[in-house]
Length: 596
Image (cartoon, rainbow, N blue to C red):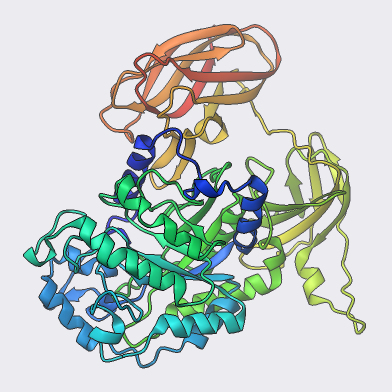
């Protein structure tokens, strides 16, 4: 994976998307003319699964982050690049790669018991080492190592026995061992020099063909880092996809082909991708490939909250393990997966086959849903259990048919197999629904409360109101983003509207105005150029220009002017770009302060 997590990769992907021809279809096999119904059928298992295991395993597990006695910074599988290890020297590690403790059945059971529905394993990472018996090169596990077995064959058989879908990660562009392969940061050894087109034709394409023909049904093909992948080069792989007609591919092939799924790395997008299938891939510690001294493990609670958060935004969670050179998944990973598995055994119904939350924000946790002919089932994942026993569900207008704690249905079986459920009482409180819940949380990590509601979901958006002094602050997190690229960014130092690349995109806030009048408008903005924009309420507008702050993370508060809001009631404020000369900006907030 990427040595700087997602920074380089996301830059490459963004550039590829921006340069792609507007007419490029979402499906790279456009000639097949897949209908929306056919696509939905192909993607159904993947959307239902919600949870998968990523496995980064290869020769890099031998040095395990250390080279010539020195700990090499960055992530484990990038040690050849980060340490600038010569090709001939790096190849010596393969002689020490003898994973005799590898047990495919045990790996698959570990994933299955954790509640995972599919596995994606590195068939070849950027070091070019094939983790399968390849006829295209001698740089593979059966020829260059003493192991001589094909672990992917064994894993494929184990997955079939356990009913787990199998996918292959394949580094098609970057290859630091075969001449001609791309290398982020540039090549450092003459042995790497060569023609990339020849590398693709003689190594990459033949190996992908081997993977798609020799291992039974393959559910996912996971490309990575499409460096120097022109459209012409990417097109060489497309005919191979016909070998597995139902395969799901990600967005990292390059050449302008967006594939089936977006792949945010090490982050959970604040609002997901409402019009795209997507999957967050994430490590359990700080590395993908094994590093002997990386012990910065995420807690089981964090992993469960991540899974719930991702599902609540309509995405999948691809959680990584990095096995050792002996073929063992680290004990810390196994223990955490057991904890996640215990939670999933009780609450999987609230994850599998669900779709995104209908609520914009929930102060106490997240929600997922399932729709049916009579209405909807809402699964309320409560991270912060209410001390007063009153769980407030904001803005839900539907009639509630039933409400219960999901754990009750799991823990109280009767002799005849029925499971009694203690129904919870609900009541209306203004625009909100209040559910009376037990005093103690049923689960230490995330408790699930189920609401069965009638009819089409009707949820009144929670809107901001005026403070005591009449002012209103509209944070980025409350914005409604309109457009394909603009979105709310959160996590780390981000808490703003970003990716405002298209001047046709715009942002909107809804709020309750009780004391109308004239307001001074200020905004927190970060920008590299002076883009012009309009702030408007109805037919009242303020024209403004963004400041130059020098960094998209460096915000400054600027006065934009005054605007009149003549009437009380629910009000909508819009921020729209002026197309001519537009320069992207990041927007953290808008504040309206009454003019005395």
